[in-house]
Every structure is written in C-alpha cells, then in structure tokens.
Amino acid sequence: MQKNGFILYVEQKEIFDMLTDEEAGKLIKNIYSYEATGKELELEKSLKIAFQPIKQVLDKNREKYVEKCKQNKANIEKRWNKNTSVYERKILYTNYTDKDNDNDKDNNIKNNNSISDGCVDGLEKIFEFYKSNIGQITPYIEKLLRKFSENLNQDILLYALEISVEANQRNFRYIKAILNNWSKANIRTLEEAKKESKKKNSTAQGKSLERKYNENEFKKLYAND
Image (cartoon, rainbow, N blue to C red; front, side, top):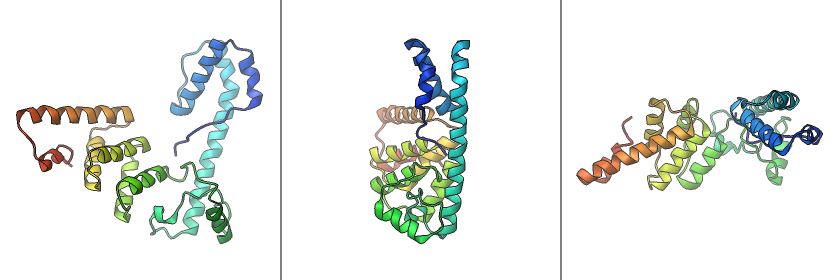
C-alpha cells in the first residue's frame, strides 16, 4: 500500500516561520525523504527537534491510511464475488465502501467523483495501463500480476508494461519474461530495473554487430524464464 501524497497543516507554519529559508528547505527535503523511504536525512540538532512534531502527525496519518485501506478492502471482499476479476468489479470506486448498501455503490458510480488513490491493493494503475495499451486482463493475467507484485513494487511492474509497449511486444508472455528476469536478479527498485534493461539492450545491440538476429531470437534475450 503505497501512498501518493501526505498532508502538512497550517498550524505547522509556525515551525517554518522560525527557520531560515535554507533551514526550511532542508526540513521540507527531510519530510519528503521520511514519507517516501521511511528514513530521515542527516540534520542539525535544531532541525531534528523541529521535525519531531511534524513526524508525529505524519505517523498518525499513515496509521489512519493503512487502517482505511484494510477496511475498504474488507468491505469490497464482502460485497463482491472474490472469483470475479478485480478490474471487472471496478474497485476504483472505494470511498463509499464503508457501508454495505447497494445504493452507496450505485450513487458512487453514478457520480464518478470519488476515485481511490490505490489503497486497496496498489494495482489499479497497472490494470488500467494494461487494458489501455496492451489488451484484455484475463483472470490468469491478473493472478500473475498479483503474484509478481509480492516481490516487485508498482513502479517496476508499470515499467515492464511500458517496455513491452515501446518494443511493440504487446503480449503478457513478453512482460512475464521481463518480470521473471528481474525477480531472479533480486531487483527491488525502479532504478535497478532501468539499469538491468539498459544492460540487456546493450547486450542485444552488441551481439547484433556479430550477426543479424531474427525476431524470435531477439525475443529470447528476454524470455529466459
């Protein structure tokens, strides 16, 4: 469950008002680092003290977010048949799932003004991109994407889909081969995935100087699963 943002409050302005512009900039960078990675930057003691009340609020909001995600997921599982494709269930509409009432679902879809930020399982963006750029999401494809998401984060999954589109290989077999390679290489960040992709491309280009590869041979560079 990856958050797309966080909240700062007007009352926290007093903290920033007491800092110089340089100190305020360092504090902001530290806030972003803490929210994105869970790690704090190296700061002067005064800035560490200034960050503590902000940190407490960020932690509380994160706890509320996680709890909301769990509740939304539980309500969705109650309402919909678990054997139905998640994409077909249109679980993008989750803000009204706190009430097990069909009228809530109907009003939410009708209004179309409350779309989830991905807190149900983090794969809505993946499903949307796949359907828009590659093809239909079958239950089997959905199952495998979920399996890969246990070890690879959403950004990496999305990058694999983008590679398939750019290479004009719009099929899940090609995507699966890429994801299998990254899993075997213990790749965990988008930066590592991009480096691995660049290395594969360099290998393919280098070998193509020795002899011309046909289409099937080139695909095998990514299909060693």
